[in-house]
Length: 314
Image (cartoon, rainbow, N blue to C red; front, side):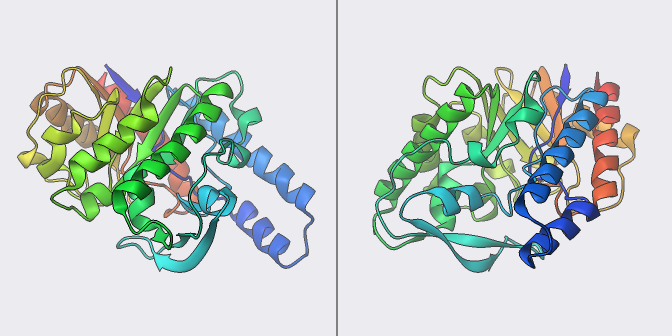
C-alpha cells in the first residue's frame, strides 16, 4: 500500500514573497501579512486534500529554514550567521546557543497554521536532535552528548505541544546524518531520537536527505520510529540493503531540487523496485526534500505528480 505526503518546506507564491518583502520595508502591516499567510496555508491544504495526500501540512510557509523557529523562540538561543544549506544555493541562520537549553514547548506551534489544518490528519516536521545539535553553534556545553541530550528534551516538549494541538504525525528531518556521515553518529542519533519519541501517541518518522542513505540503512531501520525514509536522488538504490517489513518506508521519489517533472510510470517503477528490494509492505511517496527550492507553480505540479505516482504504485 502506498501513501503520499509532503516532506518539508513548501515554495512560497510570488504574491506571498512580494508581501513578505513589502512587510520588511514597512509597506504592508503585520495583520495583512498574517491574513495572507493563513490564506496561502488554506490553499495548500486544499491542494493536498484535492489530490488525496494522506497527511496534510501547512507547508511551513512561515519557516525561513528548518531550524529557525527554535533559533528564534528558544530562551538563550538566537539566529546567528547566514550559512550555506548543505550543497544548495540556499542559506539558513545557524542557531547560536548561549545558555543551557530549556524545554518550553509551543515554539514550533506558534509558527504553524493550525487553523488551516483543523479537521484533517496533519503532519508536523521538526529537525532531528542530531541535525539541530550538529548545525548549531554551541557556546555553552562543550560536550556533544550533553548538548544532544538537552536538544532532545527541547524537541520532545515541542512534539508534545504539537500532539496536544491535534497533530497526528511527526517527521524528524535529518540531513546531517547522511550528508555529513560520521562513524559514531548512528548510536548517538538513535539514542537522542528515542528520548524525543518515547511514548508519543502519534506516528513518527525519520527522514534523511541530501546524502546517500544506503550505507546507513540497516541501522536506520532500527531507529525507534514507525517510518524511515530517504532521498532517492542522493541514494545509490542498487546498494540498498535491509529488511523494512515492520516499517513504512518514505521514498523521496520527486526531486525537490529539479524543476523537471518526473515521468509517473518511471517513478512508480522505481518506487516498486525499492520497496521490493527492502521487502517493504507499505511505502509513502514524498518529495526528496523541501520544495521551497522550486518555483511555486512547479512545486504545485510536483504535488499532482506525487498523487499520480502514488496511485500507480497502488
